[in-house]
Each structure stands twice: as structure tokens, then as C-alpha cells.
Image (cartoon, rainbow, N blue to C red; front, side, top):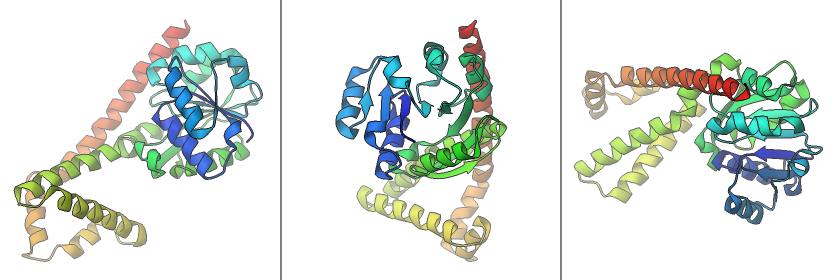
Length: 279
């Protein structure tokens, strides 16, 4: 890929740019970035990453191999309508817009385009994202390979059907926040049982890293690993009993289901707004 254009210069665009440059997937002079009106952000990205920035649509899209839609979802309809005349059928269109369907992008562009829809998460900033990817029928096997390489620069990737992306949003898209919420509780409990804040943080983070590594390295299920730690009459069992009494596992299941449902609701609303803007 020789030229890649980002429409939107937020944290996800920056994470992707950083990952691709560190992985030598593309030269910095092959990346072009624009946004709606934040000059300071474009100046910083040019200075920090050496990428091209511009508001000139001809310069941005001329001979671009791929275009990444990375603006805020609420701005998607207006942005796509503004740039659609510069999108061509030989370009690969990659969307990281939560809730905006492939069909909405097709309708807004008014063209038959190869479109990829991806759902990374905020851990992309440290190249540890879990990214799910869906494509339309226009995307070739070669383009799928390019997209896979692109998102692997910020973490793990997997291909799914588009209708599964709401579930991905509820599970891994919002997932980091659930872990941070758990850590908040662990830090509060550490303070109440007399541990210093910095000591507690180190212990909590290492515990999470160790547990994640165990899940990665072993074929054992999470339930089996939990049972191996939970000795009868021991401290872990005492703690687990409290979690069970408060039905914490069911609360997490309900949490993910509700986040998935909200993703569907927001997607429906955004897609309806997109069609309205076009009309």
C-alpha cells in the first residue's frame, strides 16, 4: 500500500498510524490525514509522526489505495457526503465508526465500494487491541490480507459477520472499561484493608497480567483455573462465596448483554440519521 488517507484524527486514527509506522507497514509520507477543523491536531500529528496533513480533498484522495473513516460517528453522514465524489471503486474503504453499518456507508457514498468495518478497542493505544473485522462482497482476498496486517499492528484481529459486531462492541469494544471498573473496586478494597495505594496498584496489575497470561498459555477453562485456586475452606473460597451471594457473574453477563443492545440501538439511530442527512 502506497497511500492511505485518514478522515478523522482522533485517538483511534493516531493509534493506527503509530502502529503501522512502528511495524513498517507503510512509509510515513504515504499517510495523509485530515479532520473537520482542528488545525492544532493536524500540526501535532505532522510534527510527531511526519505524516501529511491537509484540507485539500484533491490532494488527500488522489491515488489513495485506502481511505479510513475515523471521524466521530455523529459526523459520519456529513463527512461521507462531503468526500463521496473523491471515492472511487478501486479504493478500499475502512470504517472504524461504531454503529455505522456497511449499507449506510454504501448508501451515503452512492457507489459500489469495497468496504471494511472494524471494531477495535482503546487498548489500540498500546498495540493490544482486540479488533473484529467485517467486510462486504466487494472486498478481495488481497484486500482482506492488507486489512488484517493493518489491524495486527495494534493488536489481535479476527473476521466476523457484520451482524456480530454489536456483540463484539458489547464484549471487547467496551471490555476495557469493565476491567478498569473491577480494578477500581480492588483499589478501594485495598485501601480499606490497609495497603498503600502504590503497593496495591502493583499487586493488582501484576495479578491481572498473570491471570491473562495463564488464560493465554493453558488449554484449561477459566472455570477450571478458578477451581484450582479455590481450596475448600480457604481464603479464595470465602471471597468467591461473597461474589456468588451478590450474583456478580450474572451482573457481568447482564452488563455485556445491555452494552450489546445499546450498540444495536445506537447503530439503528445513527443509520437512520445518516439516511436522513442524505435525503
